[in-house]
Image (cartoon, rainbow, N blue to C red):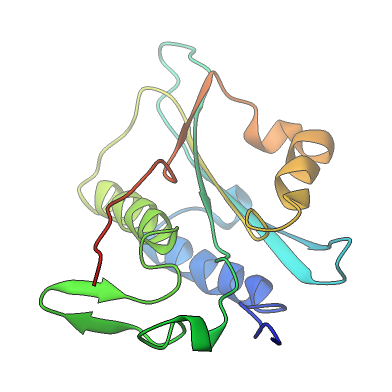
Length: 169
C-alpha cells in the first residue's frame, strides 16, 4: 500500500507558525531560532528553539523542554476513522498526532504564553526544543546536539512525549 505523507515539507511552516505564537506572547525575536534541515530521506524538516529568560539570580543552568512536531505515517485503509482528519467523539479526539505529540507542542506553547502574560519570571532560563523528525530519522535533534549545543545546553531535560492513554474503539 502507498503511505500518504504525514507532513513531509510542512515542518518548517509549522515552526514558523509556532515562532509567531511565541513572538506574539512576548518572547524576544533573538530568543527564537528556526533551524531548517533536509534529512537523509530528502524531507525538509525544522527545529524550533525558544528561550524564556529567567532572572539568573541563582546562576542555574536552563531547563530544556522537548516535543516533536511530526507524526507517524498511517495507511488510511488500516483505520476505522480517517487518521488525517481530527474527529471529536464522546469527548475524545481522534487523529494522527492528537496524543503523539501535538498535545506536548500545544501545552508547552500555551504554558509559555500564559506564564509571560501573568508576568512570571523563572529562576532559570527555560528552553523549548521542538523537532520535526522524531518519528523517522531523528536527525534534527542530533543536529541540535552536535551543531547548536549552545542553544539547548541545559542542566536537565523534560520530554513531553512520555506516554498516553488507550481507547479500544
